[in-house]
Image (cartoon, rainbow, N blue to C red; front, side, top):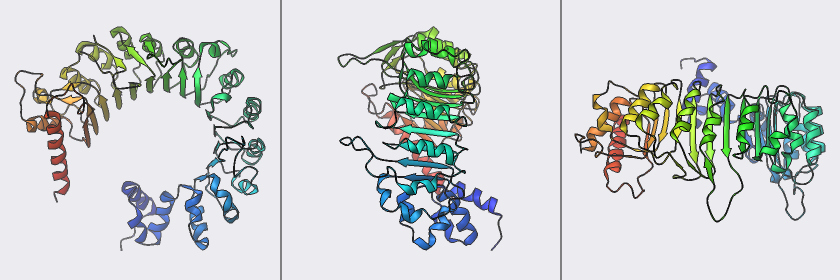
Length: 458
């Protein structure tokens, strides 16, 4: 057998994921390279099922380990094993609503063996003893990523704030418990040196932003996931100018009798974050988008990924958005690689889809509502979307242009010509009443059939 370097074997195995099990049987080299991938992240139950005399082989490759409440029965069996590469530890303590405390793992002495100097991240979930926070500070001085969820009653905001203040190494913080996002903790986070990633549960209101008393808040923050009210958004944008990536949910008090409606001026506020590489905006309600607000996003010239969506398929409408506005929006977004544009009602046509290809040649994923006539691409130089691997549109039509072909095959030919690397194709409106005929389905079936035929060719 020809010898291959371990680096090359790893590359082959990564390419074959997730179906790499047969490769592990080739020889010992492939086996040990393979388990470094298969056993990177595992949960305690999987390891417990491995014969005792083989567990050490696998723990030597584990980088992320998940411990669930039922593990209390066998943690002692695993505690003596070495964990030389363990970096990320997830512990779910479970929670008993009646007792108000964890049901299994609290104060388990065997947890300490996993809390060692090599850990760089820890996720704690459930009701656990505050002593575990202090143990992590002493035993894991290199921790940079910390996540906490459903803390119960034992971890108070005061206890958590003290932990944060005494853990200067943390640069990535996720708070998945709304009761822990207090004004005091938010103020601490705003002034924290080195904070780069932040995830906050709950809705940030205008009072929380006004309560910040830091002169240069969030000055090192790069990635933010947050929900905010409409009123808080202008102030929030003003204090997070350094962010490169934001996952923003526009939210607020909900009325069970009617849907919440937001003003599209929110887009204009977001357009001030000119350093953004990633914008993911989710509107938990309805929004009628004015043209000038939509087009204002053209200032985000560094964007690689853009997603705009609402609570349901028809939440966001832009009834006056036309092809010229669409082209103006994307003309300066030449670095865009991923687009999710869930705006239900607009006046854009197939010309907008063609403009998108000209403006964003690096686009790899495109999910956009609307009904498009792919036969109209036949007059364009090929290919318009050379890098695209996923395309999801509302539907295909052969009725937009007078001279459009009625044959699905002609539309598929244009798709193959202008989307040469396409691997996934879908229509989201196939079950909508606005699409009455079977034409979109015929185009899809024809394209997928030709894809399968290509795969079977020798």
